[in-house]
Image (cartoon, rainbow, N blue to C red; front, side, top):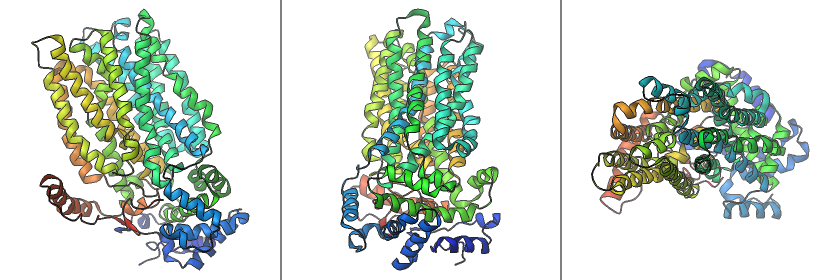
Length: 613
Protein backbone atom coordinates (compact mmCIF):
# COMPACT_ATOMS: atom_id res chain seq x y z
CA UNK A 1 0.00 0.00 0.00
CA UNK A 2 1.46 3.41 -0.92
CA UNK A 3 2.10 6.15 1.62
CA UNK A 4 -1.02 8.12 0.75
CA UNK A 5 -3.31 5.21 1.39
CA UNK A 6 -1.73 4.39 4.72
CA UNK A 7 -3.49 5.84 7.74
CA UNK A 8 -0.56 5.26 10.09
CA UNK A 9 0.00 7.96 12.66
CA UNK A 10 3.41 9.39 13.44
CA UNK A 11 4.60 12.33 15.45
CA UNK A 12 3.63 15.76 14.21
CA UNK A 13 6.92 16.73 12.61
CA UNK A 14 7.27 13.33 10.91
CA UNK A 15 3.74 13.63 9.54
CA UNK A 16 4.54 16.94 7.85
CA UNK A 17 7.81 15.58 6.45
CA UNK A 18 6.18 12.47 5.01
CA UNK A 19 3.36 14.51 3.50
CA UNK A 20 5.90 16.64 1.67
CA UNK A 21 7.98 13.71 0.45
CA UNK A 22 5.04 11.74 -0.85
CA UNK A 23 3.97 14.46 -3.24
CA UNK A 24 0.44 14.58 -1.93
CA UNK A 25 -0.12 18.03 -3.29
CA UNK A 26 -0.37 16.48 -6.75
CA UNK A 27 -4.01 16.89 -7.89
CA UNK A 28 -3.94 13.41 -9.41
CA UNK A 29 -3.15 11.92 -6.00
CA UNK A 30 -6.09 13.76 -4.46
CA UNK A 31 -8.41 12.12 -6.99
CA UNK A 32 -7.72 8.65 -5.58
CA UNK A 33 -10.00 6.93 -3.09
CA UNK A 34 -9.28 4.55 -0.23
CA UNK A 35 -12.23 2.22 -1.12
CA UNK A 36 -12.26 0.53 2.27
CA UNK A 37 -15.23 -1.35 3.68
CA UNK A 38 -13.98 -1.09 7.25
CA UNK A 39 -14.29 2.04 9.36
CA UNK A 40 -10.94 1.52 11.03
CA UNK A 41 -9.50 3.65 13.80
CA UNK A 42 -6.16 4.88 12.39
CA UNK A 43 -4.65 5.03 15.88
CA UNK A 44 -4.72 1.22 16.04
CA UNK A 45 -1.97 1.17 13.41
CA UNK A 46 0.43 2.39 16.09
CA UNK A 47 1.38 0.65 19.31
CA UNK A 48 -0.04 2.13 22.54
CA UNK A 49 3.40 3.45 23.43
CA UNK A 50 3.82 5.15 20.05
CA UNK A 51 0.30 6.60 20.23
CA UNK A 52 1.19 8.25 23.55
CA UNK A 53 4.44 9.66 22.15
CA UNK A 54 2.65 11.00 19.08
CA UNK A 55 -0.04 12.68 21.18
CA UNK A 56 2.52 14.28 23.48
CA UNK A 57 4.45 15.54 20.45
CA UNK A 58 1.22 17.01 19.06
CA UNK A 59 0.52 18.92 22.29
CA UNK A 60 4.09 20.17 22.70
CA UNK A 61 4.35 21.38 19.09
CA UNK A 62 1.09 23.35 19.28
CA UNK A 63 1.60 25.44 22.43
CA UNK A 64 -0.20 22.94 24.68
CA UNK A 65 2.79 21.45 26.49
CA UNK A 66 0.99 21.74 29.83
CA UNK A 67 -1.58 19.26 28.49
CA UNK A 68 0.95 16.78 27.04
CA UNK A 69 0.25 14.09 29.64
CA UNK A 70 -3.51 14.57 29.21
CA UNK A 71 -3.24 14.14 25.43
CA UNK A 72 -1.13 11.03 25.92
CA UNK A 73 -3.85 9.41 28.01
CA UNK A 74 -6.54 10.70 25.64
CA UNK A 75 -4.77 9.01 22.71
CA UNK A 76 -5.04 5.68 24.50
CA UNK A 77 -8.77 6.24 25.00
CA UNK A 78 -9.25 7.28 21.37
CA UNK A 79 -7.27 4.23 20.27
CA UNK A 80 -9.55 1.81 22.12
CA UNK A 81 -12.78 3.68 22.93
CA UNK A 82 -14.70 0.53 23.86
CA UNK A 83 -12.01 -0.72 26.27
CA UNK A 84 -11.08 2.43 28.12
CA UNK A 85 -11.81 0.84 31.52
CA UNK A 86 -8.77 -1.40 31.00
CA UNK A 87 -6.38 1.53 30.48
CA UNK A 88 -4.31 1.71 33.67
CA UNK A 89 -2.83 5.13 32.89
CA UNK A 90 -6.19 6.87 33.46
CA UNK A 91 -6.93 8.53 36.76
CA UNK A 92 -9.99 7.44 38.70
CA UNK A 93 -11.65 10.77 37.95
CA UNK A 94 -11.06 10.38 34.22
CA UNK A 95 -12.30 6.79 34.21
CA UNK A 96 -15.43 7.82 36.10
CA UNK A 97 -16.08 10.65 33.61
CA UNK A 98 -15.79 8.28 30.65
CA UNK A 99 -18.07 5.71 32.28
CA UNK A 100 -20.65 8.40 33.00
CA UNK A 101 -20.47 9.60 29.39
CA UNK A 102 -20.97 6.06 28.12
CA UNK A 103 -23.94 5.37 30.39
CA UNK A 104 -25.65 8.77 30.03
CA UNK A 105 -26.09 9.48 26.34
CA UNK A 106 -27.44 12.99 26.82
CA UNK A 107 -24.85 14.13 29.32
CA UNK A 108 -23.08 17.36 28.37
CA UNK A 109 -22.09 20.75 29.80
CA UNK A 110 -24.34 23.79 29.74
CA UNK A 111 -22.34 25.49 26.98
CA UNK A 112 -22.93 22.60 24.57
CA UNK A 113 -26.68 22.79 25.08
CA UNK A 114 -26.70 26.59 24.98
CA UNK A 115 -24.79 26.69 21.69
CA UNK A 116 -26.96 24.05 20.02
CA UNK A 117 -30.17 25.65 21.28
CA UNK A 118 -29.14 29.11 20.07
CA UNK A 119 -28.33 27.81 16.61
CA UNK A 120 -31.65 26.00 16.58
CA UNK A 121 -33.45 29.26 17.31
CA UNK A 122 -31.77 30.70 14.24
CA UNK A 123 -33.45 28.00 12.17
CA UNK A 124 -36.82 29.42 13.21
CA UNK A 125 -36.15 32.40 10.96
CA UNK A 126 -36.69 30.34 7.83
CA UNK A 127 -39.80 28.61 9.15
CA UNK A 128 -41.28 31.87 10.39
CA UNK A 129 -40.70 33.60 7.08
CA UNK A 130 -42.31 30.73 5.15
CA UNK A 131 -45.46 30.98 7.22
CA UNK A 132 -45.43 34.76 7.22
CA UNK A 133 -45.61 34.73 3.44
CA UNK A 134 -48.13 31.87 3.68
CA UNK A 135 -50.58 34.09 5.51
CA UNK A 136 -49.59 37.22 3.62
CA UNK A 137 -50.49 35.48 0.34
CA UNK A 138 -54.14 35.91 1.30
CA UNK A 139 -53.91 39.72 1.29
CA UNK A 140 -50.75 41.30 -0.16
CA UNK A 141 -51.68 40.45 -3.80
CA UNK A 142 -54.82 42.55 -3.38
CA UNK A 143 -52.75 45.35 -1.84
CA UNK A 144 -50.58 45.59 -4.96
CA UNK A 145 -53.24 44.67 -7.54
CA UNK A 146 -51.76 41.25 -8.31
CA UNK A 147 -54.96 39.30 -8.93
CA UNK A 148 -56.90 37.86 -11.82
CA UNK A 149 -54.22 37.44 -14.52
CA UNK A 150 -51.49 34.91 -15.36
CA UNK A 151 -48.92 37.71 -15.04
CA UNK A 152 -50.12 38.44 -11.50
CA UNK A 153 -49.84 34.75 -10.59
CA UNK A 154 -46.25 34.68 -11.81
CA UNK A 155 -45.37 37.85 -9.89
CA UNK A 156 -46.80 36.40 -6.68
CA UNK A 157 -44.77 33.25 -7.34
CA UNK A 158 -41.60 35.28 -7.94
CA UNK A 159 -42.06 37.25 -4.71
CA UNK A 160 -42.48 34.03 -2.75
CA UNK A 161 -39.68 32.24 -4.59
CA UNK A 162 -36.98 34.89 -4.65
CA UNK A 163 -35.71 34.28 -1.11
CA UNK A 164 -35.02 30.64 -2.00
CA UNK A 165 -33.49 31.39 -5.39
CA UNK A 166 -31.06 33.95 -3.95
CA UNK A 167 -30.41 31.67 -0.97
CA UNK A 168 -29.40 28.85 -3.28
CA UNK A 169 -27.64 30.76 -6.04
CA UNK A 170 -25.94 33.56 -4.06
CA UNK A 171 -26.14 33.07 -0.30
CA UNK A 172 -24.85 29.50 -0.28
CA UNK A 173 -21.73 30.41 -2.26
CA UNK A 174 -20.56 33.32 -0.11
CA UNK A 175 -20.34 30.95 2.84
CA UNK A 176 -16.70 29.97 2.30
CA UNK A 177 -15.20 33.49 2.28
CA UNK A 178 -17.44 34.60 5.15
CA UNK A 179 -16.42 31.58 7.22
CA UNK A 180 -12.77 32.00 6.29
CA UNK A 181 -12.51 35.62 7.40
CA UNK A 182 -15.15 35.82 10.13
CA UNK A 183 -15.28 32.31 11.58
CA UNK A 184 -18.44 30.32 12.19
CA UNK A 185 -19.69 32.72 14.86
CA UNK A 186 -18.90 35.85 12.87
CA UNK A 187 -20.66 34.54 9.78
CA UNK A 188 -23.73 33.64 11.84
CA UNK A 189 -23.75 37.10 13.44
CA UNK A 190 -23.61 38.89 10.07
CA UNK A 191 -26.41 36.80 8.60
CA UNK A 192 -28.48 37.26 11.77
CA UNK A 193 -28.19 41.03 11.35
CA UNK A 194 -29.30 40.69 7.72
CA UNK A 195 -32.27 38.55 8.72
CA UNK A 196 -33.26 41.01 11.42
CA UNK A 197 -33.32 43.98 9.04
CA UNK A 198 -34.92 42.46 5.94
CA UNK A 199 -38.22 41.23 7.47
CA UNK A 200 -38.72 44.73 8.85
CA UNK A 201 -37.96 46.10 5.39
CA UNK A 202 -40.56 43.74 3.91
CA UNK A 203 -43.15 45.07 6.31
CA UNK A 204 -42.59 48.65 5.12
CA UNK A 205 -42.62 47.88 1.38
CA UNK A 206 -44.66 50.40 -0.67
CA UNK A 207 -44.82 48.33 -3.88
CA UNK A 208 -44.38 44.77 -5.00
CA UNK A 209 -40.99 45.76 -6.39
CA UNK A 210 -39.92 46.99 -2.94
CA UNK A 211 -41.15 43.78 -1.35
CA UNK A 212 -39.25 41.82 -3.99
CA UNK A 213 -36.03 43.74 -3.22
CA UNK A 214 -36.27 43.15 0.54
CA UNK A 215 -36.87 39.45 0.04
CA UNK A 216 -34.03 39.27 -2.50
CA UNK A 217 -31.56 40.38 0.18
CA UNK A 218 -33.27 38.22 2.81
CA UNK A 219 -32.64 35.15 0.67
CA UNK A 220 -28.90 35.83 0.58
CA UNK A 221 -28.85 35.90 4.37
CA UNK A 222 -30.94 32.74 4.62
CA UNK A 223 -28.66 30.83 2.24
CA UNK A 224 -25.50 31.85 4.08
CA UNK A 225 -27.05 31.03 7.46
CA UNK A 226 -28.48 27.71 6.31
CA UNK A 227 -25.08 26.54 5.09
CA UNK A 228 -23.20 27.49 8.27
CA UNK A 229 -25.44 26.84 11.28
CA UNK A 230 -25.81 23.06 10.67
CA UNK A 231 -22.04 22.77 10.16
CA UNK A 232 -21.38 24.70 13.37
CA UNK A 233 -23.78 22.45 15.26
CA UNK A 234 -22.33 19.26 13.77
CA UNK A 235 -18.76 20.30 14.60
CA UNK A 236 -19.64 20.90 18.25
CA UNK A 237 -21.82 17.84 18.89
CA UNK A 238 -20.50 14.49 20.22
CA UNK A 239 -20.89 11.66 17.71
CA UNK A 240 -23.21 9.61 19.93
CA UNK A 241 -25.92 12.29 19.83
CA UNK A 242 -24.83 14.40 16.87
CA UNK A 243 -27.89 13.51 14.83
CA UNK A 244 -30.27 14.46 17.63
CA UNK A 245 -28.49 17.70 18.50
CA UNK A 246 -28.12 18.87 14.92
CA UNK A 247 -31.73 17.85 14.37
CA UNK A 248 -32.68 20.74 16.62
CA UNK A 249 -32.28 22.68 13.35
CA UNK A 250 -35.32 20.97 11.87
CA UNK A 251 -37.21 21.09 15.17
CA UNK A 252 -36.83 24.85 15.27
CA UNK A 253 -37.59 25.26 11.58
CA UNK A 254 -40.95 23.66 12.30
CA UNK A 255 -41.21 25.60 15.56
CA UNK A 256 -40.70 28.73 13.48
CA UNK A 257 -43.43 27.54 11.12
CA UNK A 258 -45.77 27.08 14.07
CA UNK A 259 -44.88 30.43 15.64
CA UNK A 260 -45.31 32.10 12.27
CA UNK A 261 -48.80 30.64 11.97
CA UNK A 262 -49.50 31.84 15.51
CA UNK A 263 -48.44 35.34 14.47
CA UNK A 264 -50.66 35.10 11.39
CA UNK A 265 -53.66 34.25 13.56
CA UNK A 266 -52.86 36.94 16.14
CA UNK A 267 -52.71 39.77 13.59
CA UNK A 268 -55.46 38.52 11.26
CA UNK A 269 -57.94 41.20 12.42
CA UNK A 270 -55.62 44.19 12.00
CA UNK A 271 -57.01 45.05 8.58
CA UNK A 272 -54.89 46.05 5.60
CA UNK A 273 -51.63 45.96 7.57
CA UNK A 274 -52.03 42.33 8.63
CA UNK A 275 -49.74 41.01 5.89
CA UNK A 276 -47.09 43.58 6.86
CA UNK A 277 -47.14 42.35 10.45
CA UNK A 278 -47.06 38.74 9.29
CA UNK A 279 -43.92 39.33 7.22
CA UNK A 280 -42.23 41.67 9.70
CA UNK A 281 -42.58 39.42 12.73
CA UNK A 282 -39.95 37.03 11.29
CA UNK A 283 -37.18 39.28 12.66
CA UNK A 284 -37.67 37.97 16.21
CA UNK A 285 -35.65 34.70 16.12
CA UNK A 286 -32.79 36.19 14.10
CA UNK A 287 -32.49 39.04 16.60
CA UNK A 288 -32.13 36.50 19.43
CA UNK A 289 -29.52 34.60 17.40
CA UNK A 290 -27.41 37.68 16.73
CA UNK A 291 -27.59 38.85 20.33
CA UNK A 292 -26.44 35.52 21.75
CA UNK A 293 -23.99 33.99 19.27
CA UNK A 294 -20.78 35.52 20.69
CA UNK A 295 -21.45 33.88 24.05
CA UNK A 296 -20.86 30.54 22.29
CA UNK A 297 -17.36 29.11 21.75
CA UNK A 298 -15.96 29.06 18.23
CA UNK A 299 -16.04 25.72 16.44
CA UNK A 300 -13.01 23.64 17.56
CA UNK A 301 -12.67 22.17 14.09
CA UNK A 302 -12.73 25.61 12.45
CA UNK A 303 -9.97 26.79 14.80
CA UNK A 304 -8.00 23.63 14.05
CA UNK A 305 -8.44 24.21 10.33
CA UNK A 306 -6.98 27.71 10.74
CA UNK A 307 -4.00 26.57 12.81
CA UNK A 308 -5.32 27.81 16.16
CA UNK A 309 -4.91 24.51 17.96
CA UNK A 310 -4.64 25.83 21.51
CA UNK A 311 -7.76 27.96 21.07
CA UNK A 312 -9.53 25.02 19.49
CA UNK A 313 -8.79 22.84 22.49
CA UNK A 314 -10.06 25.54 24.83
CA UNK A 315 -13.31 25.61 22.85
CA UNK A 316 -13.55 21.83 23.07
CA UNK A 317 -13.05 22.02 26.84
CA UNK A 318 -16.14 24.24 27.07
CA UNK A 319 -18.16 21.79 24.97
CA UNK A 320 -17.26 18.57 26.79
CA UNK A 321 -17.98 17.45 30.33
CA UNK A 322 -14.38 16.54 31.27
CA UNK A 323 -10.87 17.37 29.98
CA UNK A 324 -10.15 13.73 29.08
CA UNK A 325 -13.25 13.68 26.85
CA UNK A 326 -12.28 16.99 25.25
CA UNK A 327 -8.70 15.85 24.63
CA UNK A 328 -9.86 12.53 23.17
CA UNK A 329 -12.27 14.18 20.71
CA UNK A 330 -9.89 16.99 19.76
CA UNK A 331 -6.88 14.75 19.19
CA UNK A 332 -8.81 12.19 17.15
CA UNK A 333 -10.22 15.00 15.00
CA UNK A 334 -6.69 16.22 14.34
CA UNK A 335 -5.48 12.74 13.34
CA UNK A 336 -8.07 12.46 10.58
CA UNK A 337 -7.77 16.13 9.64
CA UNK A 338 -4.09 15.57 8.82
CA UNK A 339 -5.10 12.81 6.41
CA UNK A 340 -7.59 15.15 4.76
CA UNK A 341 -4.86 17.77 4.42
CA UNK A 342 -2.74 15.30 2.48
CA UNK A 343 -5.50 14.99 -0.10
CA UNK A 344 -6.22 18.72 -0.32
CA UNK A 345 -2.89 20.38 0.42
CA UNK A 346 -2.54 23.52 -1.67
CA UNK A 347 -6.07 23.40 -3.06
CA UNK A 348 -7.84 26.76 -3.31
CA UNK A 349 -11.54 27.53 -3.13
CA UNK A 350 -12.43 26.49 -6.68
CA UNK A 351 -10.21 23.42 -6.54
CA UNK A 352 -11.96 22.32 -3.36
CA UNK A 353 -15.34 22.99 -4.94
CA UNK A 354 -14.33 20.90 -7.96
CA UNK A 355 -13.20 18.13 -5.60
CA UNK A 356 -16.84 17.79 -4.48
CA UNK A 357 -17.48 16.34 -7.95
CA UNK A 358 -14.07 14.87 -8.86
CA UNK A 359 -12.75 13.07 -5.76
CA UNK A 360 -14.64 9.76 -5.47
CA UNK A 361 -15.09 9.81 -1.68
CA UNK A 362 -16.36 13.40 -1.68
CA UNK A 363 -18.46 12.87 -4.80
CA UNK A 364 -20.30 10.00 -3.10
CA UNK A 365 -20.98 12.21 -0.09
CA UNK A 366 -22.21 14.86 -2.51
CA UNK A 367 -24.56 12.32 -4.10
CA UNK A 368 -26.08 11.61 -0.69
CA UNK A 369 -26.33 15.22 0.44
CA UNK A 370 -27.75 16.42 -2.89
CA UNK A 371 -30.25 13.56 -2.88
CA UNK A 372 -31.72 14.30 0.55
CA UNK A 373 -31.81 18.03 -0.16
CA UNK A 374 -33.53 17.55 -3.51
CA UNK A 375 -35.89 14.96 -2.02
CA UNK A 376 -37.05 17.53 0.54
CA UNK A 377 -38.44 19.62 -2.30
CA UNK A 378 -39.63 16.66 -4.40
CA UNK A 379 -41.78 15.31 -1.56
CA UNK A 380 -44.12 18.33 -1.77
CA UNK A 381 -43.96 19.49 1.84
CA UNK A 382 -43.27 23.04 0.81
CA UNK A 383 -46.42 23.38 -1.27
CA UNK A 384 -48.10 22.98 2.13
CA UNK A 385 -45.67 25.24 4.00
CA UNK A 386 -45.86 28.00 1.37
CA UNK A 387 -49.50 27.75 0.31
CA UNK A 388 -51.50 25.82 2.93
CA UNK A 389 -53.74 28.79 3.71
CA UNK A 390 -54.49 29.18 -0.01
CA UNK A 391 -55.13 25.43 -0.42
CA UNK A 392 -57.47 25.28 2.57
CA UNK A 393 -59.32 28.35 1.30
CA UNK A 394 -59.74 26.63 -2.09
CA UNK A 395 -61.55 23.66 -0.52
CA UNK A 396 -64.09 25.84 1.25
CA UNK A 397 -62.59 27.37 4.38
CA UNK A 398 -62.92 31.07 5.09
CA UNK A 399 -59.61 32.97 5.30
CA UNK A 400 -59.76 32.85 9.11
CA UNK A 401 -60.52 29.12 9.13
CA UNK A 402 -57.71 28.54 6.64
CA UNK A 403 -55.27 30.27 8.99
CA UNK A 404 -56.40 28.08 11.89
CA UNK A 405 -56.10 24.93 9.75
CA UNK A 406 -52.57 26.01 8.84
CA UNK A 407 -51.86 26.58 12.53
CA UNK A 408 -52.84 22.95 13.12
CA UNK A 409 -50.45 21.91 10.35
CA UNK A 410 -47.63 23.80 12.09
CA UNK A 411 -48.45 22.28 15.48
CA UNK A 412 -48.43 18.77 14.02
CA UNK A 413 -45.01 19.37 12.49
CA UNK A 414 -43.57 20.37 15.87
CA UNK A 415 -45.11 17.46 17.78
CA UNK A 416 -44.19 14.89 15.11
CA UNK A 417 -40.58 16.06 14.91
CA UNK A 418 -39.89 15.48 18.62
CA UNK A 419 -39.83 11.63 18.44
CA UNK A 420 -37.17 11.83 15.75
CA UNK A 421 -34.78 13.32 18.32
CA UNK A 422 -34.59 9.79 19.73
CA UNK A 423 -34.96 7.84 16.48
CA UNK A 424 -32.38 9.52 14.26
CA UNK A 425 -29.36 8.16 16.17
CA UNK A 426 -30.90 4.71 16.80
CA UNK A 427 -32.83 3.84 13.64
CA UNK A 428 -30.63 5.97 11.43
CA UNK A 429 -31.05 8.56 8.69
CA UNK A 430 -31.39 6.12 5.78
CA UNK A 431 -33.94 3.91 7.53
CA UNK A 432 -36.21 6.80 8.48
CA UNK A 433 -36.31 8.24 4.97
CA UNK A 434 -36.84 4.90 3.23
CA UNK A 435 -39.70 4.06 5.60
CA UNK A 436 -41.58 7.36 5.29
CA UNK A 437 -41.41 8.29 1.59
CA UNK A 438 -43.86 5.58 0.41
CA UNK A 439 -46.33 6.70 3.08
CA UNK A 440 -45.95 10.34 2.02
CA UNK A 441 -46.73 9.33 -1.56
CA UNK A 442 -49.92 7.55 -0.47
CA UNK A 443 -51.20 10.35 1.77
CA UNK A 444 -50.41 13.13 -0.72
CA UNK A 445 -52.17 11.26 -3.51
CA UNK A 446 -55.15 10.58 -1.23
CA UNK A 447 -55.31 14.26 -0.29
CA UNK A 448 -55.31 15.27 -3.94
CA UNK A 449 -58.06 12.79 -4.82
CA UNK A 450 -60.12 14.04 -1.87
CA UNK A 451 -60.19 17.46 -3.54
CA UNK A 452 -62.36 15.94 -6.29
CA UNK A 453 -65.30 15.43 -3.91
CA UNK A 454 -67.89 18.11 -4.66
CA UNK A 455 -71.08 16.76 -3.09
CA UNK A 456 -72.06 16.42 0.56
CA UNK A 457 -71.62 18.89 3.40
CA UNK A 458 -68.68 21.23 3.63
CA UNK A 459 -67.23 19.12 6.44
CA UNK A 460 -67.40 15.99 4.28
CA UNK A 461 -65.49 17.78 1.53
CA UNK A 462 -62.90 19.48 3.71
CA UNK A 463 -62.29 16.81 6.37
CA UNK A 464 -60.51 14.19 4.22
CA UNK A 465 -58.23 16.81 2.64
CA UNK A 466 -57.14 18.17 6.02
CA UNK A 467 -56.73 14.65 7.44
CA UNK A 468 -54.47 13.43 4.63
CA UNK A 469 -52.42 16.65 4.66
CA UNK A 470 -51.86 16.16 8.40
CA UNK A 471 -50.91 12.47 7.97
CA UNK A 472 -48.51 13.44 5.19
CA UNK A 473 -46.98 16.03 7.51
CA UNK A 474 -46.48 13.49 10.30
CA UNK A 475 -44.57 11.16 7.96
CA UNK A 476 -42.43 14.02 6.69
CA UNK A 477 -41.59 15.11 10.24
CA UNK A 478 -40.49 11.59 11.16
CA UNK A 479 -38.15 11.20 8.18
CA UNK A 480 -37.09 13.59 5.46
CA UNK A 481 -37.70 16.77 7.45
CA UNK A 482 -35.09 16.20 10.17
CA UNK A 483 -32.65 14.28 7.97
CA UNK A 484 -31.91 16.67 5.08
CA UNK A 485 -29.83 19.42 6.67
CA UNK A 486 -28.42 17.18 9.40
CA UNK A 487 -27.15 14.62 6.88
CA UNK A 488 -25.67 17.24 4.55
CA UNK A 489 -23.81 18.94 7.40
CA UNK A 490 -21.99 15.78 8.49
CA UNK A 491 -20.99 13.86 5.35
CA UNK A 492 -18.27 16.12 3.89
CA UNK A 493 -14.62 16.15 5.03
CA UNK A 494 -13.49 19.15 7.06
CA UNK A 495 -11.56 20.55 4.08
CA UNK A 496 -14.60 20.58 1.78
CA UNK A 497 -17.30 21.12 4.39
CA UNK A 498 -18.14 24.71 3.43
CA UNK A 499 -18.11 23.95 -0.30
CA UNK A 500 -20.11 20.75 0.08
CA UNK A 501 -22.72 22.32 2.32
CA UNK A 502 -22.92 25.33 0.00
CA UNK A 503 -23.75 23.05 -2.92
CA UNK A 504 -26.32 21.13 -0.87
CA UNK A 505 -28.01 24.35 0.26
CA UNK A 506 -27.93 25.58 -3.33
CA UNK A 507 -29.79 22.44 -4.44
CA UNK A 508 -32.34 22.70 -1.63
CA UNK A 509 -33.13 26.37 -1.89
CA UNK A 510 -33.03 26.62 -5.67
CA UNK A 511 -35.61 23.89 -6.04
CA UNK A 512 -37.64 25.40 -3.18
CA UNK A 513 -37.64 28.57 -5.24
CA UNK A 514 -38.72 26.69 -8.37
CA UNK A 515 -41.53 25.05 -6.39
CA UNK A 516 -42.68 28.34 -4.89
CA UNK A 517 -42.50 30.05 -8.28
CA UNK A 518 -44.45 27.43 -10.20
CA UNK A 519 -47.13 26.28 -7.76
CA UNK A 520 -49.52 29.27 -8.16
CA UNK A 521 -49.60 28.70 -11.92
CA UNK A 522 -49.57 24.89 -11.55
CA UNK A 523 -52.60 25.18 -9.28
CA UNK A 524 -54.49 26.96 -12.06
CA UNK A 525 -53.35 24.84 -15.00
CA UNK A 526 -53.20 21.37 -13.42
CA UNK A 527 -55.79 21.99 -10.67
CA UNK A 528 -54.84 21.29 -7.03
CA UNK A 529 -55.56 17.57 -7.56
CA UNK A 530 -53.12 17.39 -10.45
CA UNK A 531 -50.46 19.25 -8.47
CA UNK A 532 -50.84 16.89 -5.51
CA UNK A 533 -50.64 13.87 -7.82
CA UNK A 534 -47.53 15.27 -9.49
CA UNK A 535 -45.69 15.56 -6.18
CA UNK A 536 -46.96 12.14 -5.06
CA UNK A 537 -45.18 10.66 -8.07
CA UNK A 538 -42.02 12.58 -7.23
CA UNK A 539 -42.05 10.92 -3.79
CA UNK A 540 -41.53 7.53 -5.43
CA UNK A 541 -38.65 8.85 -7.53
CA UNK A 542 -37.11 10.39 -4.40
CA UNK A 543 -37.38 7.03 -2.58
CA UNK A 544 -35.44 5.30 -5.35
CA UNK A 545 -32.75 8.00 -5.29
CA UNK A 546 -32.37 7.66 -1.51
CA UNK A 547 -32.12 3.88 -1.84
CA UNK A 548 -29.23 4.24 -4.30
CA UNK A 549 -27.22 7.14 -2.92
CA UNK A 550 -27.89 7.81 0.79
CA UNK A 551 -25.64 5.82 3.13
CA UNK A 552 -26.12 5.32 6.85
CA UNK A 553 -24.12 7.68 9.10
CA UNK A 554 -25.61 7.21 12.57
CA UNK A 555 -23.26 7.44 15.57
CA UNK A 556 -20.08 7.70 13.52
CA UNK A 557 -17.66 10.54 14.13
CA UNK A 558 -17.37 13.14 11.41
CA UNK A 559 -13.92 11.75 10.70
CA UNK A 560 -15.00 8.09 10.40
CA UNK A 561 -17.46 9.05 7.69
CA UNK A 562 -14.47 9.46 5.38
CA UNK A 563 -14.30 5.70 5.01
CA UNK A 564 -18.06 5.19 4.92
CA UNK A 565 -18.05 6.99 1.57
CA UNK A 566 -14.98 5.17 0.28
CA UNK A 567 -17.09 2.19 -0.86
CA UNK A 568 -17.81 2.61 -4.61
CA UNK A 569 -21.41 3.46 -5.46
CA UNK A 570 -21.88 0.40 -7.68
CA UNK A 571 -20.73 -1.88 -4.84
CA UNK A 572 -23.05 -0.14 -2.40
CA UNK A 573 -26.08 -0.43 -4.71
CA UNK A 574 -25.25 -4.06 -5.52
CA UNK A 575 -25.13 -4.91 -1.81
CA UNK A 576 -28.42 -3.15 -1.10
CA UNK A 577 -30.18 -4.88 -4.01
CA UNK A 578 -28.79 -8.38 -3.54
CA UNK A 579 -28.34 -8.57 0.23
CA UNK A 580 -30.34 -5.97 2.13
CA UNK A 581 -33.50 -5.90 -0.01
CA UNK A 582 -34.02 -9.71 -0.06
CA UNK A 583 -33.48 -9.78 3.71
CA UNK A 584 -36.00 -6.98 4.21
CA UNK A 585 -38.64 -8.72 2.09
CA UNK A 586 -38.18 -12.10 3.76
CA UNK A 587 -37.98 -10.69 7.29
CA UNK A 588 -40.56 -7.90 7.30
CA UNK A 589 -43.03 -8.90 4.57
CA UNK A 590 -43.00 -12.71 4.75
CA UNK A 591 -42.18 -12.56 8.50
CA UNK A 592 -39.44 -15.17 8.36
CA UNK A 593 -37.13 -15.40 11.35
CA UNK A 594 -33.81 -15.13 9.51
CA UNK A 595 -30.45 -13.78 10.59
CA UNK A 596 -29.66 -10.19 9.70
CA UNK A 597 -26.84 -9.98 7.13
CA UNK A 598 -23.69 -8.02 7.96
CA UNK A 599 -23.61 -4.44 6.65
CA UNK A 600 -21.37 -3.55 3.74
CA UNK A 601 -19.69 -0.92 5.91
CA UNK A 602 -18.57 -1.92 9.41
CA UNK A 603 -16.83 -0.09 12.21
CA UNK A 604 -13.64 -1.58 13.56
CA UNK A 605 -15.40 -2.50 16.81
CA UNK A 606 -18.74 -3.53 15.30
CA UNK A 607 -21.39 -2.54 12.74
CA UNK A 608 -21.80 1.04 11.62
CA UNK A 609 -23.50 3.02 14.31
CA UNK A 610 -22.37 0.75 17.15
CA UNK A 611 -19.66 3.05 18.43
CA UNK A 612 -20.57 5.32 21.27
CA UNK A 613 -18.24 8.13 20.35
